[in-house]
Amino acid sequence: MRTTILAFVLAGASVFYATTTAAGPPFDGTYKSSLGQFSEGRETTTWVTTGFLGDRNLLRGESWDGSTLGAEWRILCPEVVRVRLIYDSVAGGTGHRIYQIEYRGGFLELSGTGPWGNGDPLYTAVIDIYFEFRTVQYVDGVKVGSVSDHAVNGHFTNSKCFTWGIGNEVWLGEGKTVAAGYPIFVLAGCKPTTKDDGHWGDLRDLTLTIQGCVVGTEATTWGAVKAIYRN
Image (cartoon, rainbow, N blue to C red):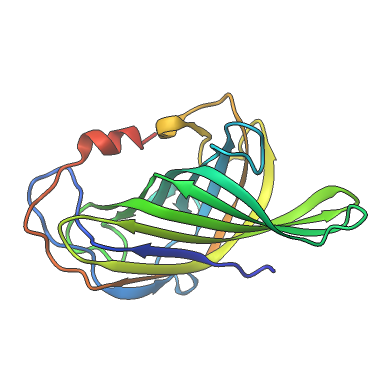
């Protein structure tokens, strides 16, 4: 199960930025990281409580262009609120388990420099629903691999816009110090920390579709809110 799905469904869009002049919502279209239209990404999950599958864990995903994190898009800190085992084939310590993981809260940011850009520096969506389906493989009781399917619903305000995305995620490592070039560990409020354990992985082969965007009637400033979700 190396091919997994990362799905974004963002309804009712608007533009959040630091000025009061609205240039326009993101352009409709389908964009693929495999075609070089935007960057693939990297993800880090902070273990706030009990580890790899713990409640209250916090996820942070960011685009990666080979040298810079977050230049094109970011998933900012949805929190795990429920973990449920839905399949188990482990026998004698070998096999795989599938978990359904439910998140709450968080934001999605799309940079205006991406191919969807329509004149505003940043497009921000509030995450409403987020599910992950994580498959973990074990050999002799040792975790040897993990891949995940993600499904996200969110919304902007002030215009009507839908987006969908698909992609692959693969677990690469875990520990007390996140690997270089991956998003930082965070605490509640998406605040950076160097005191927590966590795991990290890659987000690959992403396809993002934006559809139905219209210009809102009001410009909205979220400087104070977005400042909480920045490094």
